[in-house]
Length: 307
Image (cartoon, rainbow, N blue to C red; front, side):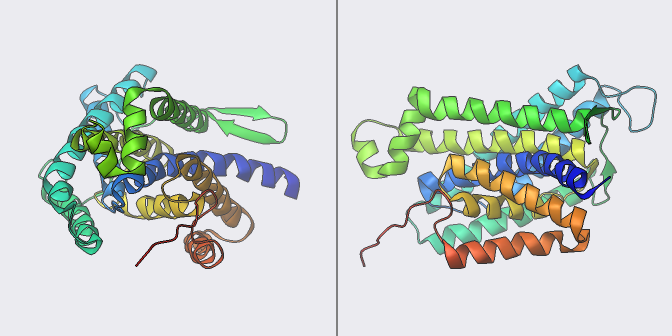
């Protein structure tokens, strides 16, 4: 393959990876946009979703190398299970970890988010039916489709199309539904929204649920594309999704989408033309550069804070 073909192929690979980052980043940016909280446990919610999907696939008889393969139906059921489990987990985390600290200094909430992250990781490590050892995630047989100089696998198509559909659904919810209007109102002014009859607690809980549902879907897509799961698998994708949210402008939904795609493409181009060892370094370098050059991100707005 010539350089141009390699570049196009890495763009496709980057779009697939970036779609997953974008899904996870949406949870970060939605929660921050409403309660100004960086939910560092979000990547581990993704991990729980991946395990929920794994157990559904195993219960349906699918194996990694056996005769029973992952079908479209079993994958859809895995998606559904991951979304439901992550939604319930989001309710518990928001109600018992974050809601009591809503009026506390932000540092308290940040420390709590890190604590929730560690609790989720270590709880999964000590559960007898999970354990600390990595597990191979059942996935579909890989089929490739060739379009000129580039090749796209069926798994990449599933990742890209599923991510796009979920993002479209999110945009519809936020911009066209009553719940979405309430989320925008609470994000703009929490106290004024409360005075206008909007249930702030309910709206914030729904925001956590929607973000975690997307994280659960992202966990299934990530495990399908990179078929190995373990209790700390959400740590690095969670951090990179946070970088994507900051890159796009944290608090901005279109920014999270764009930031995820940019970060995914930057990573895959680094792996294709330099070395896979530099991929993480490039991601964190992007974070440093964006904080130095444009702290508000691509779609973020600089705000003046009175002190």
